[in-house]
Amino acid sequence: MEEVLLGMGLFSNSLHVPRALVPQMLAMTVSDCVGLMLADWEAKLEMNRGPVEIDISCQFEEVAADVISHVAFGRNHKEAKEVYLVQKELQFLAFNSIFNVLNLIPGFRYLPTKNNLKMHMLEKQVRSILMNIIKNRVNCKDTVGYGNDMLGIILNACAPEHVQNPLMSMEEIIEECKTFYLAGHETTAQLLTWTMFLLSTHSEWQEKLREEVVRECGKDIPTDDKLNNMKLVNMFILETLRLYGPVTNIQRKTGSNLELGGIKVPEGTILSTPIKTIHRDKELWGKDAEEFKPQRFENGVGRAAKHPYAFLPFSIGPRACIGQNFTMIEAKVVFAMILQRFSVSLSPNYVHAPMDVFTIRPRYGLQVVINSLQI
Image (tube, rainbow, N blue to C red; front, side, top):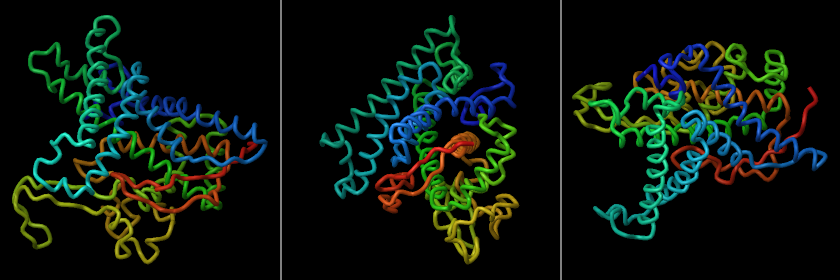
């Protein structure tokens, strides 16, 4: 399944798609989705005959949802977009329930309270949408195949309706779809948001990055080779991930008794890694750990801090995020396409108040002022 899920499960060699083409195909998918947003910006600028203010965080959530819908569900992307809307509401209900002291009572979440009934209804709705998409794929297999999107590849590998001992049950496939959709959308949307926040507050870097994008791509859509040549863009995104990484904490359960730093840890212990704290630790990153300095990644991730594994936005090791390449490609394409056409500055209406709702997001949105460029 590693090959199957490469790059967020986009394509596999089993479907006659060369591995080298995966980033290029993803870049084209992203450009199609973000192009609609940028066209809307251009229309607003033309109507206003000058700079306009927009809440870019909301728009990035839409773009990220469009991208993951196309990548994961292909021809069913419109139905899958409903999953984004439902899970968004479900996410906030779940987050709010964390702070309800009544949830500390054993079994309270099973009581028919208004909030619990709403969450149960939304969970059933998500499952129903995904089940219908999967059944439709299975029923159409003999005529149009499973497809070469993430869902199609999983079905080709597991085929729960056609193999005597499938690798995954239907329920497991549904859960995988929910996980990939939530993880592939939410984290990328917030990365794009904070990248644009830092871009709008560091005009000197905005000019450097635009020069690099124009030099490498001109007005063309960034392809795999061109994305790899954007060293400054890559450094900028990595520094954004250090300061405003969407995930602030990861947990792991020990599979056996072990010893860490002289401390004996029994099997089954939940270990928590505070990524946000590590990323701003002055002992690891220097006295300027709180400052925005993309050049710290000039010699690569392993040399950016005093410890080679101090950078953890995607975790590390065999349990590292399987979608990190997907996220980086999407972020670079969106970033480059914006720099090609627009200048961005922070709106005076913006209030800096990051909050943690499963991911780090701006509490009141990100209001920026955009202006058109003539390149």
